Length: 501
Image 1 (cartoon, rainbow, N blue to C red):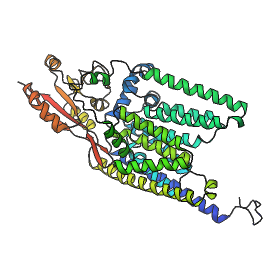
Image 2: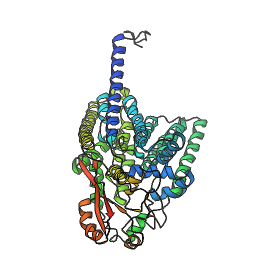
Image 3: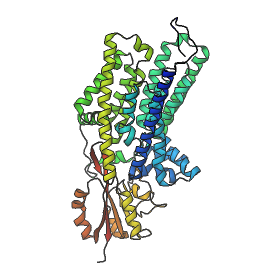
Image 4: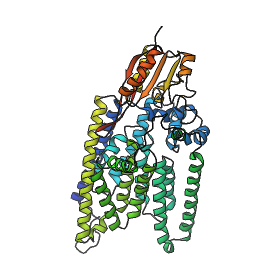
């Protein structure tokens, strides 16, 4: 609708404006199509690693009651993703290869929200969806984090709607059940939303107030439920390892090193520019009177990583939380029309910062996708194929370390004689955590599979000893867990075969 020079609507659309809007929308769909093609092609040559396999095996081999009320506490994560995989296998009989496309479907929905609903200028939206976490780490790698951007950004859309708390509550309940990081983000955003609601309490109708009460109860019950199912027990692996860190070769990084790692991993690859970006973004949110929705979830995530181990692939949760905070703080078109010069320049500065952030992350994504194409991400699939080629299945096989779950996923039953489950159980007695020579001597397995994060070092440590026990290295299935422009760790498998004396 357009207005004539009297300011009254004429009821007639300007054809030129309508055409321009249509072309921009076509461009958005073109960007979405390009994103889908990029991720789809990358999945074709991505080798799934142990973390992807572990969730699949848990969903495949356990009923929902056992999964939720027993095993998830050992995983240290809620079970929304596992339940989705459980339904995919039980209802649709989905094969293991489908896990990548299940994750991609949720990542695509998150990208669609960015392209069609985000308040950022259109070029920023296009850059964002091709940044590292959006196009690779949380799209190609099939893990619960493929849900984080979708739910966090959906919550950002609903945040300013204070008259329908049930809508954002439904999203936050789902987000809280994705991962511990999602739980933190959901709790922080729910608190900020409640504070806004209390500020407007006098203007709310009675029925809306009752909805707020029901939503508060719902969120409280959700967190209570998560506490019950995830409350650690003394037999969890992390506690057993801490009792004797030397036995398990555990070296704890300093708190400062952890903070530097999370900031650089989430943003600009180096701690100093990443810290500057984080500080400036926080200051801008403060000027927008939205510091709480930016600083609270991001600060608590950083604090979490100083307490517990935060692997590189977890760092994207901080990236998503920061973008969510900026999304909520972003000025509407109406607000921008009344900006002062200072406010306009501050927003332009924030746009420039985001261009730098997204541009740098697009470079990271391009390198990671290239590396995933040129090299093997995980040796699990190759190890499984080797065992099939030498007809090892059915013979006694021992497996060691968590990564053997990646091999198990390629078989429909447990192939390892020294483990009672196909998935790796992160609880005592820690089956397959270290080489048990008494067990090996008693059974004399035909093959030993050793998952290794540093095969060169592990080979030097165990090879001579294994040779003395009658085992020779038969096959190396190498892999490289890529993170941005580097290799985060190796994902290799040393396969030893018993030779006749």
